[in-house]
Every structure is written in structure tokens, then in C-alpha cells.
Amino acid sequence: MSKRLFISLTFLLLSATGAAASQVLVPMDEAQKNHLKAYGIAYFVLQHQQEVDWLLNYRGGSFGFRQTPLFEEELRARGVSYEVLTDGQYNNILQQIADPEVNMEVMKLEKAPAIAVYSPESQQPWDDAVTLVLNYAEIPYDQVFDEEVLTKQLPRYDWLHLHHEDFTGQYGKSGLSHGEWLMQQQMESETVARRHGYGKVSQMKLGVVKEIKAFVTGGGFMFAMCSATDTYDLALAANGVDIVDALYDGDGVDPEAQQKLDFSLSFAFRDFEVYLGPYSREFSSIDNSWNERGLYEGNDYFSLFTFSAKWDQIPSMLTQNHEKTIRGFMGQTTAFKKQLVKPTATVMGVTEEAGEVRYLNGTMGKGTWTFYGGHDPEDYWHMPGEAPTDLALHPNSPGYRLILNNILFPAAKKKKPKT
Image (cartoon, rainbow, N blue to C red; front, side, top):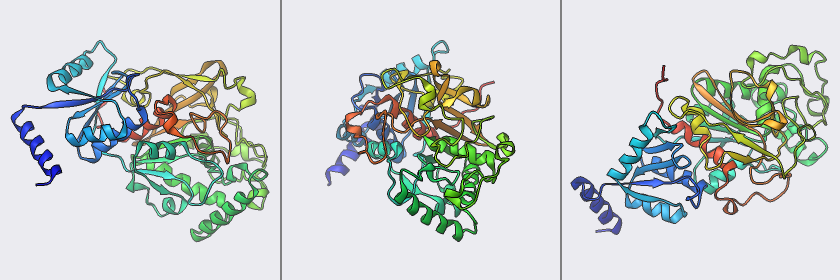
């Protein structure tokens, strides 16, 4: 008899007799040695068709699940702190959470979400915080780009990530700083555009944006960081109006572009001004740029709001953390001017002294979206071409935890709204 089969049979026998019924608690407060890999453990348990309890606001948003030798072996292998509790001990925790006077709740995670990362196959001059943390946490994902989106492959997935991407078709306004990369991207993008019958790359990107919107409206979850946030909404609001300079598409911009923006089409932002200059590095007035913020690395922080775990489960899940004050970090799009955020969006993190929003969420149709400003939560001035952040040096990063909260969110069992 193999060792693995012996262990499995022994566990089943003990469980059947009730002699060793127990639960694993993965604490997510300061007692946790590796917060980031703990999310990978939760995903691993879901992959093995076992439910995970996400204990909202209990010890930093801890995880609980049935103890098995396989799960304990994986916890030890990944260096994740855990406690083994009797069923009685664990039920005491659940009773504490169920108390209507405490701001806690149990969310059942039922199914490992299928994850897609929107990113070109060719080398980029910048890295991606989400793929870095997915790889570090050992959470699997597929890479998709324009071809896959336009051939309607998104419904295969539950969760889609957009990072340092320019959905207006201006290649990040990188004409001066990344000439060689720009020419390569133009060639690749124009080839895909022609294949799908688009006259210009900006028109193709609008087609991609609309496919993503349909994905969200149909029940998908979209998570965007950095320039993917404001360029996505700008592309929706422009809706085919030419806002792309001749440097990038061979013809000029529409002089009435600002007047033609339709803010009813966008997800998060309204009443913003489009910037038409080809070298401005800003796409619109949405971003609270570095020279407007009045902050520097030593005093740049944002605060997470606390939500009612029993009534507002979505923002509660997305803000689980062992810290409520998060170090800020820059990006091509760093933060969002508060007055330009739609009232229908849920603001989850702000820098009050700069009048800006760093982290927000909303719904579109049956789906959900989240926008997170900045590029790399553990590298304040991460510049193109620099070495990627080594997350082994930041296993307890509260800024990266916000990304991983979003990854687990689609696994949650949907609850009926409380009325």
C-alpha cells in the first residue's frame, strides 16, 4: 500500500468515527508569517473541491477549512502559519462571529476562480504587480490579450486583470521614451486590428473594451491597476471619438473631442477632461499626478475604510487586511481625483490630504469591477526596465494583500441582499 493511500484511508477512518475531527485556522493578523502565500493556500484548498471559510474582520480576515494531512503538508511547504483546532474550538469562533453586535461575518468560498491576465506576449518595459503576486502565491492563471478577447474567450474565466495598459490606442504615450518598444507594439497591434477588420488600433482597443464590459455585465469580475483604470473609462466615454494624435495613428484628433465624451458609458469616472497632447504622459484629468498631490515617499499613505461585514460583504472582502493604513506608491496613473468619481462607486481607500481616491469598487450589470491606483505596492518609484520586486522580501505586504482579496472574491458564495 502506498504511503499517500495509507494516509488518506487513515484520515477517512478517523473522520468517520469522529475521533480526530478538526479544522485549520490560517490567521491573517500579525501572527501570520506569510500573508501572501496564505491566499495561495486558500486557492489550493478550493482546487481540491473543499470549501474555505473567509472569516471577515476576524484576526485580519483569517481562513478556515477542514484539516487534512494534504492541506497541512502544503501549509508547511509554503511556510504559512496555521493552527489546528477541534470542531468545538472552531464552532466557538463561528458563534463569536455570528454575534449581531460584532462587525464580523463568515463568507463561504466554494470554487477556485478561473483567472485571466490581460497582457501582451512580447516583452514590455515594465512588469506587472498582479502576475508577480500570483506567481509568488502559486495561484495559476492564463495570459490573454486582444486576440483572445476579440475571439470571445473571456466567458471561460471568472476574473480578469488589466494592468499597465492603454486602452485608448496611444501605447501609453511612450513615443519619446520607448521608441523601439513603441514600433514593435504598433506593428503587432496593427496586425491584429487588420485581422479583425478595424481600420485603426484605437478602434480595435474600443472593441476590446466593449468585450470586457460585456464580460463584466454578464457576471465577470474585472480588476484594473495603474493606467488601465483611467484609459479604460476614457475609451468607454470617448466611444470612437478620435482622441489619438497623429504620432500614434497617422491622423489628427477630433477638435470637439471633449464635448463628445459620454460619461454615462464609463464605469467609475465622470466630468473629466481628456488630454490630447501626444507627450503629456497623462491621458485625462482623472489622475492626481505627482505634481498635484503634494506628497512624497516619506508621507504618502492611504487609509482603508471599514465596512459592515454583515451588510456590505463586497467592500468588506476587498478591504481585509492586517493594516488599515497602506503605504502609497506611484504609477503612470497613481490616484483618482475624488470629485471625478461617480457617486455610484464605492470608495474603499483614500488619501484625504490630497483629495484623492486610491481604491474603489462598483457593479456593472451582474458583475463587479475594482480600480486600484499605482503600479507596485512595494516599490514607490518603480521605473520601466527596473528589476521586478522580489516578494520573498515582502511576504506580509498589506498593499499586495488588496490585490489578492480581489482574486479570491469571485469564489464567494453569493448571498441574498439583506433588506
